[in-house]
Length: 172
Image (cartoon, rainbow, N blue to C red; front, side, top):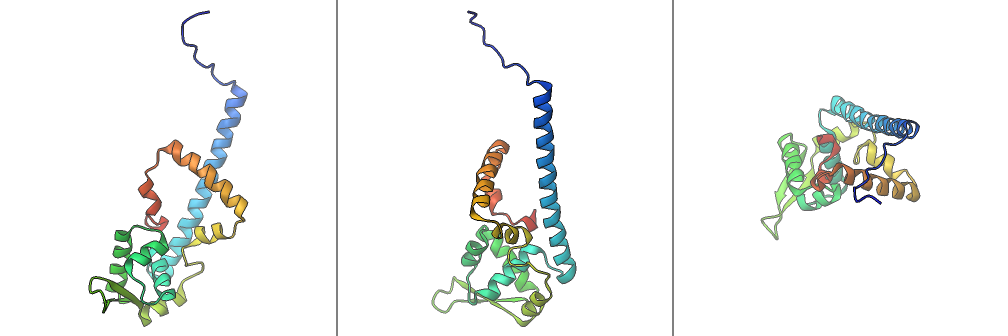
């Protein structure tokens, strides 16, 4: 027997073509998902003049009076600095009030203002997190688990940075 290292033979053309075809089909599916999400965010922005992440933050503040920025970040599953930037934009537009907490002057409490309430009534549904989170919530547990496992494999193959998981799709 030879001491040389054997390299794997190239995959037969038929098997390689099937794999390429499947990869192309999955790529098309990703394009469909991202285009649906992008179209929804564009519709929201055209309708109310705010980005999807800002609308989502506005709805979270509405649903959680006196929420702090850290709690907003946890609820939206985003980084605290991202939540702070969202809040600053909403305060600057007069949609949210940010007041210092009486007990802890470092903490800020958020409150939806009438202009924010009015704006939320104009937003096309779904706005609590956007189209993709709503669609994911509609799936059964087994489907979600398969997706989670399979996407974990894809994320590993991409060598994707974990920090990207905390950036809202509306900001990509």
